[in-house]
Image (cartoon, rainbow, N blue to C red; front, side, top):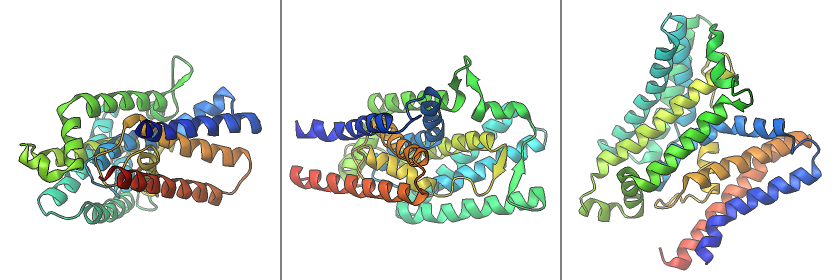
Length: 316
């Protein structure tokens, strides 16, 4: 019963938070405002799906924000070079996959701790994005995308009412939940995060599946870069600054454990929406950005403290 309550806490908190703001803040419950919350949370959720796999496997990735920025520069460069839009999107997303593969190789082959490996790639990706943007544009840290059709990804609507980034978000959430709960990759991810030695003795190819989860996260970071580039009408080397903390926070607030072996895609979605609702509530109530940081930081600390307490009680 206690385990069930622990799993439901993020959902209950989101419900109470939304109801409270709906009753006290004019305009919060407006359908357009709800759509904005979902749209501005979509990239965090999309990358959060990949981060859930990594954290469940007892890993971490600090490079996702920088990979997003680098991918946005690549897609903008491709479009400017005259490469068809569809191929530009594929190349931009695959760029994220390449960074994820690099992270996985640093961890699996060189046996670097995930924190160190992804901290290094965070600096490499951000620095490379700045250098490449300056080389292509000649000045500054951005590359404009003149193709108006590209803007549909970030600002368009399906059926006249569904924001495209939100539709992409829910598709990624659905696929991520299925893979995590009903495929070999999902089962082995939990096994690696719960007890890596037991997983290895059980015949799990730990190195291969570790590579897969980092490539998956890199791919979703690249996809996030496509959406951010569309919203901002170009690639920007400064995009995604601080996103790694928001993505990790979404997983942790949603019930994921930094010790590995625990986490759900729906929990990550809930954690990201909690942060989105808090951010939106602060804006509507004219509260400073710093208050958002305070509240979200307290939530992260509370979530980690609760996970530590739960593990001690269960003897894990």
